Amino acid sequence: MPELSALGWDSAFDKAFARFRSGGLQPARVATEDKLHYTVVAADGERLATISGRLLHEAESRAALPKVGDWVAIEPLAAEGKAVIHAVLPRRTKLSRKVAGRDMEEQVLAANVDIAFLVQALDSTFNVRKLERAMLMALEGGLTPVFVLNKTDLCNDVAARTTEARTAAAGAAVLAVCARTGRNVRALLEHVRPGRTAVFVGPSGVGKSSLINRLCGEDVQATIEVRAADSKGRHTTSARELIPLPGGGLVVDTPGMREFHLWLAQDGAENAFPDIQDLAARCHFRACSHTTEKRCAVLAAVESGQLARDRLDSFVKLKRELTSIAAGSRERSHLARKRDARARSRSLHKHLKAKFEL
Image 1 (cartoon, rainbow, N blue to C red):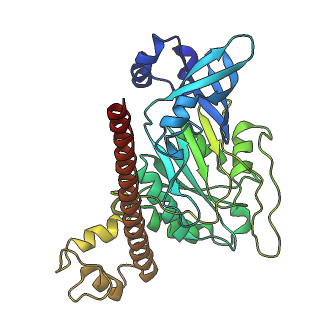
Image 2: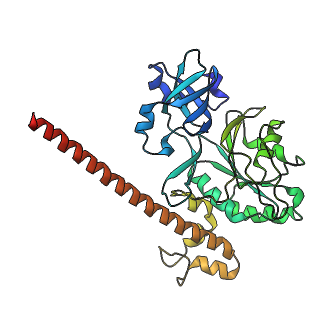
Image 3: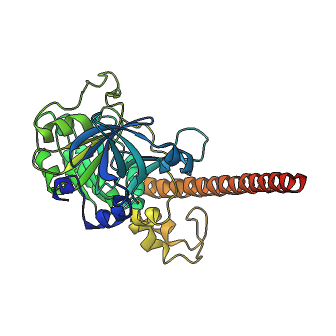
């Protein structure tokens, strides 16, 4: 369907959609999400959409419901400019985090995204450790991370900050840009080719919406100045939105996140810290935690100055956090299975009772 190719539709998605076509459904991509109300883009244009009761009932969690970037099967409603979403196609990639608070639940920020622009401001709020956290989940979700260092006009030593970011980037691209002046912003377009989608991720006030406005050539996203006293940002983007670029490609703006709560990760930590993984291969103990063990190659690298102490501390902290999340997720799954077993038992008991009473 060439009309949808500009939105990222390809033969793989078309194959996944084949079973819905015979039922008269149409493919569309989710552009915005507001609780259970959506804007979707189909071959015939935008429609307001809601999800079917069956999809809502059968979803295993909120993460399984449609999210910005998802391809969905819709039933157009004649003459209303609306539609009903009946299914979500398998996601190629996703950017997820754990919901805030104690709940062990996944929150999908964007789906079917190719590039993650991980944005930090080159002012007093710059924090390379936050870039590491965001990169870990981008890699785990199948996205290509790109570090974007915005506000070069506020930094006295851009080269030093760029070098610091490259050390943490593990080979990912690092771009120093300025949304205010336009410096190097067009370099972002090299990563967002027609048919591809990028998501902007970072705290409030780092300039995500301003960068998108630069790329679009107009003010499509509201912006607001950060507080001068502490450079802290204020939320302007309140929801995720899929935005087409004039030259092709799409971007997703996201609300600012003060904390990137990690979700389950298997290979992400290793891919985000290849330098530590290479050193760990030479540790005496296979299950070395790189904290207190003797003959630890990673600790030896810190002592010799080959590896920065704060990078190791960040790695150890992230591994502990992921271990805790994995344990909590297993416990949640165990409790869910017990609840399902009890429900099936009650249902069977009710059925047998009714049968024999008859």
